Image (cartoon, rainbow, N blue to C red; front, side, top):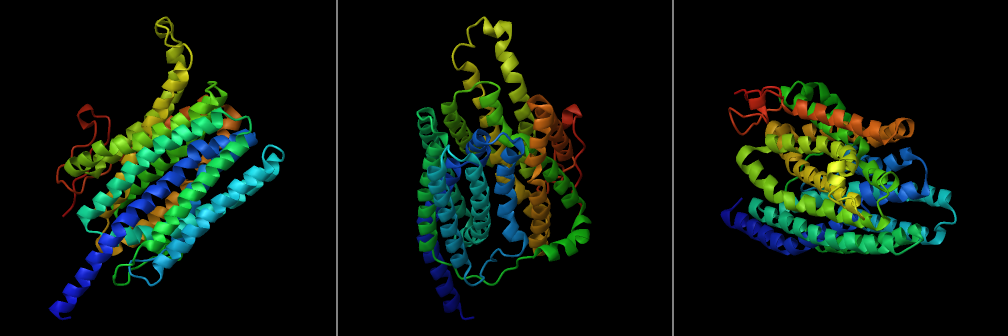
Length: 455
């Protein structure tokens, strides 16, 4: 190709990147706003717990949110970089996602408190369709964002998304507190949240439609069958095998995620309006911790980020178990700290730690995989990892069964033990950026010695 043709292509891509920057930030911010308004672990889990006595159904909410989103990609339905029409797929899937949430809002208004069984069935059917649409939308839009910007500009786009996501998350928390605290008809209040999410997702779909597709060569997307055929070869990579075991344990520790808010409401008597405070705390925890995670990742590597995230994950069920008796302890109770809503406010710490842990995982999970996987085989490694995690994502259903059988304390203890297993398994990870990595807590001999990179 002549030099002037290369310059023309580069110039076109730069113009496309500048055009896409503003709409990309708007798309991400509106998407985060919509997801926060109907957060599956807090808002929707709490909503289902109010219209159903089944903890298994409560656990089904985050299971669908994680498992079904990955399903289109596992079937090879995602779009590869450069594949024709990937933006069109993303836009139409975004429109369908918004329509599904709008339908949930209309149905919730129509049925209300009168027919909870019908509302419950409709909710799960439409919510499943919503998550499938999200799966078809996510891959092409992530590809489009990644291939529209250079590394530095890409960081700016994601940083702006996180900033506005945190600001809007605080506003969402206030909105939820006002809606739930001032209404006797909870389904109608949640219906308003659905309709607000519909507006946010519609704006996200509009921003996606305004983006332009950069010129890139065809990429590669592996189907589920191909991933399964490649599994023996991929599992021969010792580093990937250890990372897969760690990720499985870390994902299994989500077994109690949708039940913390139910525990706060049913067991601790937390006022319903403070559910909004918990949503805001999670959003702020996720954003603020990025200021810490990114320097750690840059200076010490993603392995340390994953290890600390696992430690925080392990602490969440301990906090849920320890806060109530701690604040009732006579030494603290005599200080007058138990007056009013003290316990309800203290429980906010659970969701702050939860948000900080999620932020670390989001930053380091994929980055670590890209570090250890050979470049030519990265799609196959990613596909196999997603296949395993899509199955593990349904673990909250098991959590619901344990909760119905044995109660909250037993479930939180099991969650702690799984989190402890994740922390231990993180000790077998290596840090590919350094020849002599220092494992977390290695000086205390608590974790397995890190392996040296071969070659």
